[in-house]
Image (cartoon, rainbow, N blue to C red; front, top):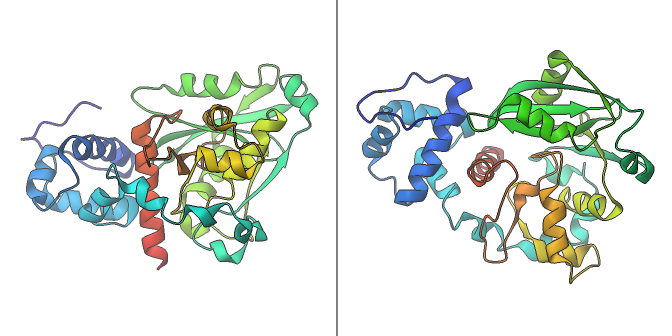
Length: 294
């Protein structure tokens, strides 16, 4: 998306919200989280002050000021304050525990290692595209559940996003079915649909080490974060932080397996396969989910 002309107001639609949010994050990163001058902030995005407020309320339920705080560079540090408890036994009660009512409920199945080594040979998958709060969601799925989730935008075409996911299983057979994918995506990105009675099913296909890392990511609650070193400690490999980082980066099911909730020990938002601005946007959006739940 090109930077909007400060003298020309945009026509906003839900489909264009993320492009504007991305521009807002870029503006806030360059100018800091102080949004006391809402009119100036709005004009920098090509919006009126009313459009600005409506946009954030619609997109994440937060005021512009609360959103700015949620995507500030030091926001991840605040998420780490209680990190000691994030991966402890408290959360061993289960991914679908009622203690996580404001989080996505996920059940998963790990495919046998032989399937991974065979590159998905013999597996039939569908794929498709559907709108999400973070741009177009590109999704692959098997009969077992969702096997891949990525994003398309002005920088990454739908074909490129699909190739990124499909190349992980080069011998699988893919068929496009946008209608079925749209139903899956609706259950992922609409918090009112999050329920233990309707969990999102995913299938994890990777090496034993990668699957162990991804299983651990599923324990990080919405509104909290942990570090690569804590994930390494939790899986019994305290010296493997770098290998954990590589496995996190290869997570094929973005958002659902919340690799965006893993940050550097300083709170830095180090790397994200689909772009650090999107990682910051997801954390800001989740702050709105938490706010609405309380």
